[in-house]
Image (tube, rainbow, N blue to C red):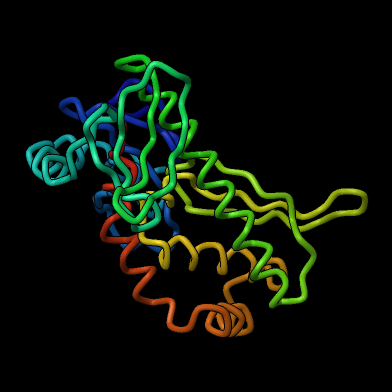
Length: 245
């Protein structure tokens, strides 16, 4: 029995001074440790075994001040409201109020792209988010077709998601069921080159369901050096997830 009143399990979430702490077992870990998951905006307390999860939980409680300091360093939530200018695949896009249902207006020579929607507060934010997902899906489907053509792979079903643990996922095809790829719609808020790298990454998985040398060779053949794009996501991913949070 743990000090928290019940046996603790891998994946349990605790409240430490108002912050979420997720317990994780990592059999290769040599000691109990804490780290900040910037994308999920939570702290991970790692233990080498289930038996030591209570130790990890106690350690997190002792480091409540450290946890509060790390979370305070995360990007603040960006509101979705008329007058805000966001980055849509690296290009400015102005959010506007309108009397009509949500619409997207491409950029012109004189004006940036615009998303205009009626409503206010959460209703307005939901409408804008729906349009961002629509724009993201269109770009992802187009780029997926492009890279599948270069790889000689069959076009998968493409959809968008809002998972905080990954930017994309690839499911191989099965008999009677085509392959499918899902992308985080929040990649629409990243530079085009970064989002495009994720598309190439997932398309490469259609040929190699691993991260071995042949997989990375495919990625490099499609987009060149992928390391700057991966570094950008590590550094800025939390900001993308803070949008509208």
